Length: 232
Image 1 (tube, rainbow, N blue to C red):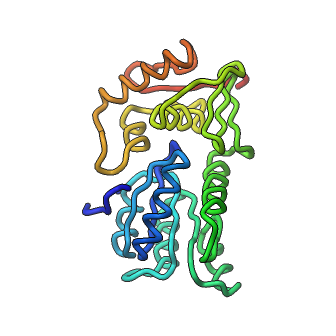
Image 2 (image 1 turned 90 degrees about the vertical axis):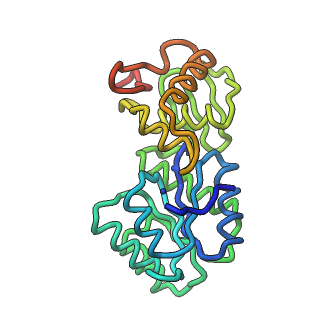
Image 3 (image 1 turned 30 degrees about the vertical axis):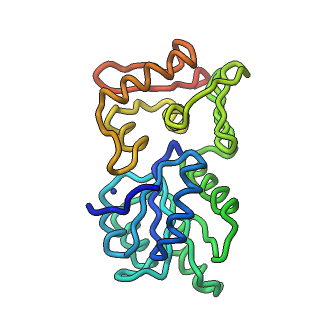
C-alpha cells in the first residue's frame, strides 16, 4: 500500500482520490495487483493540486470530498488543459449527477457499492481508449502485451517478467512510436516516494531487453527509449 501524500499511472500511474481511507486502500491494492502504480489522496484541495502538477495516466475520483468537491476538481482540471482519463467513483446514483459528471469531462462513472473487478475493467478501458487502443491486447510487431492478463509474448512465446518489468514493457507499448525519456519512465513506473534514479531505469531496460530479445526496445541516445511498430 502506498503512503498517502505529504507533498504526486498500467504500467500506468493512477491517482486515487477517495476520502474513505478503507475504500481508498482496497482500491489501491486492487489497482496495484492489476499492474498499475497507485497513489492516494483523501481531500479535494490536495487532489486538485496533485492532479494538476504530477503526470498521472488516469484518475479515480470520488465526488463527495472534504474541501473542493470532485465535480469542481474535474472542471478545474479540464479548464486547465489536463486530459488524463477520469473514472468517477461515487455514492450518488441520480442520473442527473451522472450526466453532470460526464459533461464536466469524466470518461466513465461507477456508483458505490461496486465490484472491484468492474472498477479495474473500467479503469483499463479508459486507459486503453486514451492511448488509442480498442482491445485489451496491444500488438507491436512480434510483441503482444495482454493488459488484462498482464502477460507478454514475443512471436507467441511467453516472456516471464516481474511486475516492474511488465510495467516498463506495457508503458512503452501503450506509447509505441514515441520516444520516452528516462525521467518519464521513472515518473510512471514508480510511486511518488519510490525509486527515481535514472540509473535504475537504465538497468531495468537492460534486463528487459535480455528477456525480450535485442531490437524490440530501441535506444535513442540522448533522448530515451522506444518500441516502434514496423507497420507504421
